[in-house]
Amino acid sequence: MSLHSPLDISRSFLATVSTKMFRYYEDRIPKDASLLIVSNHRSFMDALILMTALASPIRFACHHYMGEVPILREIVTGQLGCFPLEENQQRQQSFFSQSQQLLKKQQMVGVFPEGANPMVKYTQPNHVGEFRRGFAHLALRADVPDLAVLPIAIASLEEVNTAAFPLRLLSLFDPSEPLFHQSGWHPLVIYHRVAVLIGRPYWITSQHQHQYHGKQAKNVVAELTTYCHHEIANLLLQGCY
Image 1: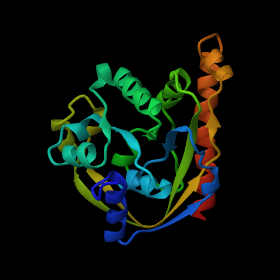
Image 2: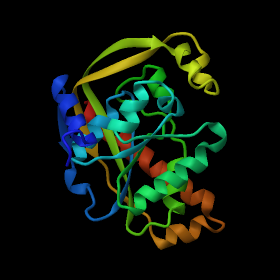
Image 3: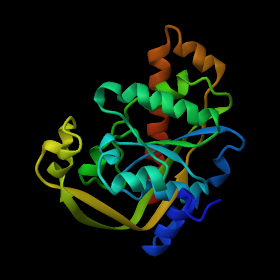
């Protein structure tokens, strides 16, 4: 593996900022399977934390603006291997097509279903917001054998909070995002001590896929979304106290 691989970059960054990471339930990580990683999201460090915890590169879907901002674009796409989503009109189809191709190659794909909200508004370490259901649709429609959705909780034990830059600055790069048209500053959360708790995998079966393509589609999407949200919320309670 290259010295400049996403995994090496992640490990080096955590060492540079002296972040101590504790990993729990690693025996739950499936072997020889395609993995869709689902996690809570409060810090720019989350992708680095997850790659270090799983000892593997992870291809993260990230916000459109990250592919538009100079320097940031080179970091997230060139060095970390993330794939920014398209603008609103093409966002969902772009997410599905890129993720499905990666999963077919047994590359880990990472998703933060809370979206950008917890990144631009400070939230408590034990709080997890509402999940968007795009990841569930991806998992259920992807024609990928041996696919598991793996919920993971990132529980901050000790952190520093500061302000990075005005939120409205980001509207220059993505005017379509309502979150970037509010006053205030983009928070910056830096973990000093963090626990990563691996949840129980949710395996996508042929029965799930049959239900998704039939009359039970709404129910099976809701079931998977709720399962991951509850799993992460419960793990956060374990990790933060």
